Length: 249
Ligand code: PEP
Image 1 (cartoon, rainbow, N blue to C red):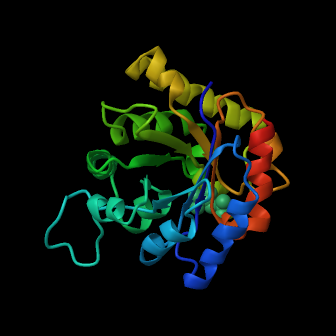
Image 2: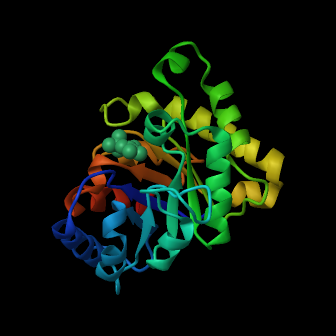
Image 3: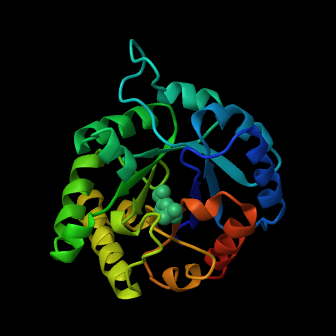
């Protein structure tokens, strides 16, 4: 049985007051439910780790640098993230691929750095609307997966999040058939590259406008093991029902 995971990405939202949501969410989680990760902005990481103590919520960062240290003003290393007590880091979110011009090779280097610091990397891949419209989704996904994922991936150090860019923050969601097709394709690629055991065990998340009212449908896809959730992860009242739908799936 693959582990199920619900990951929340707060993006550039939230201040210390927002951390109260972690206690509210944590109190609603069953001991047996899916793994839960919340990725707040970097200045909140340390406090978030403490705010989540005594709950089943793990804390993750939204990015790390590809170098271990040095003259990179404003950047944050994987070691610094691990030092806060966080256990996960998102790598290659489409907003970073776009606004920070991150290439697959950069993301691959970031993932290796995350692994070296015992962080689990949530590697994001996903096509633009034009690729979707021209039926290029699987080619784009294959290229991003091949280029962003280092060879030493395991089910412990890696989570893959499929996030169609046109579905992020838009309220548009692919059909269940489209989600199923892409997730089955990613699973096949992982098995071909990493072998049956590892490829079959790496959790695959869907991301893009997951909300309490569509989560149950999305989680019906066999190779969807959870979700990467943006907007609906900011409030426990929205994130908790998504986690509950995953638990039931
Ligand atoms: C995201 O930022 O990864 C995301 C999926 O956002 P949203 O859920 O708001 O579409």
